[in-house]
Amino acid sequence: MKYFIFSIFLLIQYLWDRSTSTCLTLKGEILLIIHHIIGVYIYLGAFLFDPLYHLLFTILVLIHWLTNNNRCELTIITNKYCGYEKERKFQDLSHKLQLTKLNKNIHYYYLIGLIVYDIYYIFLNLKGYKI
Image (cartoon, rainbow, N blue to C red; front, side, top):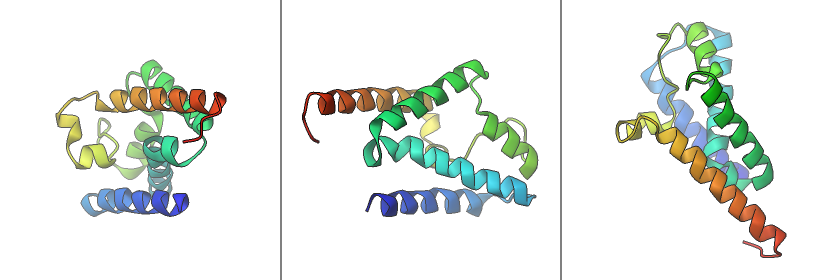
């Protein structure tokens, strides 16, 4: 069931992105698919998969953003291969739903919230509680 939920969320996000833009190269399109898989994992991985792996991955993403001028290198590379503007943001559901208009740093809040959730979930499991 968790793979089904993940796949549906991925399909919605990817198709919505593709319905509003086109990519000029196959390499760019493959990068977009990979980027959407990673994006959906960031959003749902804490709830569907192992929280320890998700915690480690999310911390690495946060460090990457902080040390890369608040940009994802995968977005930069994908923009190049797809022929997008250099400053174009990755079109995940937050952008499509215009949640970034509420706060331009909303992705940082997501990551911090997910990190807290992962740590809490891991702590409860270590204490013997099953959620």
